[in-house]
Amino acid sequence: MSKIVVAIGGNALGDSPDEQKQIVKNTAKHLANIIASGNQLVIVHGNGPQVGMINLGFDLAHKSDAKSPIVDFPECGSMSQGYIGYHLQQALKNELNKMKINKEVGSLITQTVVDKNDQAFSNATKPIGSFYDANTAKDLARKNNWSIKEDSGRGWRRVIASPKPIDIIEKNIIISMIESGIVPIVAGGGGIPVFKQGEDLIGIAAVIDKDFAAAKVAEIIEADQLIILTAVESIMINYKKPEQKALSEVTKDELLEHIKDNQFAPGSMLPKVEAAISFAEKGKNNLAIIGSLEKVKEVLAGKSGTKIKI
Image (cartoon, rainbow, N blue to C red; front, side, top):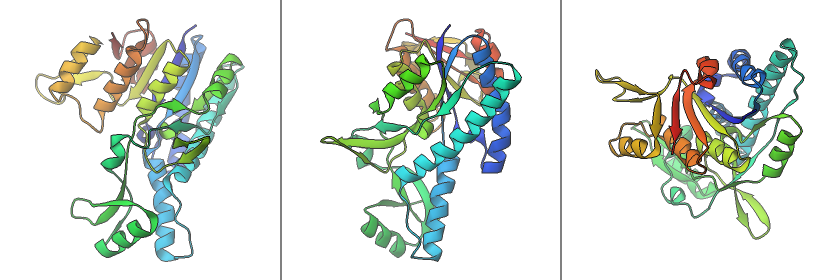
């Protein structure tokens, strides 16, 4: 039996609660196949569209009624963990019941430790929430200690950082769930970013890349495999060019050369590749795979996806 951490993108879950509820039924079938193959599964999911929707809802409510509170990103992230986790655990449990597999599934509100001195905080780049005119944006920035930037001529928006994960606060709970045979859904959206101040944990406005968080979870639980599921079947070089080539197996050094050559888009494949490298280099037997959700069976059989080894 292999211990496998699977990372699923938030964009693969739809753009609304109703759409997501239908999409996760198909997602659950693929995830159930991993369990049916005798593996211990841990699920990490993204939350990009979902947390943006939640944040925007509070933002718009505040714009129409100043008495409606502004709700900050750590709280919005926790809300997205809850409702995405609910949909995933329900759909997966239903699928396992159909397959006569007696497995419990549970989602865990997860906090991810970041360094508040991470250089990402000095150069926040991730735009979130509503567009504002310059005066309103600057007033909100002053009142709420926000960073703001002009966004492509469309107005001013709040921007937040994307720091690297250092640790998972609930790691011992995750390990206990695994030891009890439960399928954990953890670190949703990369986890709620927190930093340590003395003995206290403090939430901080940031977005942690879910692939890096999945790699950190895989490292902590000593997983055998990290599988990052995406819309394409494998890593490509010269993507969408006549000389496009799929990579079936690649080493860390080869990938680093491709990164130097700017082969991977910063907001798309690059973080997946970097997260896969970070897990693979933690142990000589660690296997990271980037592949398609729709071809999970083939990925598990080594017939699809890109394998990354040191």
